[in-house]
Length: 196
Image 1 (cartoon, rainbow, N blue to C red):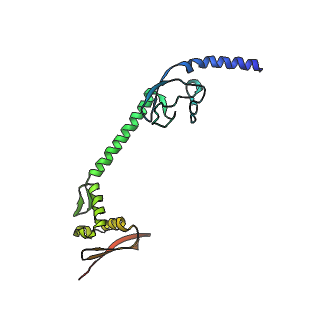
Image 2 (cartoon, rainbow, N blue to C red):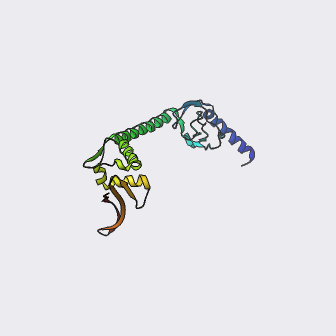
Image 3 (tube, rainbow, N blue to C red):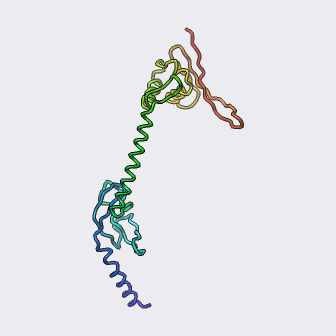
């Protein structure tokens, strides 16, 4: 095929594509929920823009999101209806996840039969308070090796350490135990009464 034939073929293709590029489209960003009007183009409109395939296998470049806070360029830009659908679906998922987390955090934390806290925040506040002031430990907190392990971890990090609380000396220790064929590491607290 000669170059004249190629130019004529390219001219026919450009004339076929002209209505696609000239049509004003209602577009939207699925990341920030912004809708805007724009045009498809033949050339890149931003550095990270990649071609998008639309009807009949035609590739075009989609304009980037006009919202500068979005920062997603043309990633996630579709027609307005589907972009808003994706945006609302994602926001609904995030809302439900936040509700589940809030519901879980509001539930009482039961450490043992007689050691319960009204919610997760009160539980963590109590651990932080006792790590700073071990003399405030109650008898049920001293009897719970799980709770004492949390206090030791908060105060000292990992390892074996000793804590003095009023007239008690509490030492956490780790040893190896066998459960069936599985070798597991178990922690316990060694509690001693110090007489003065």
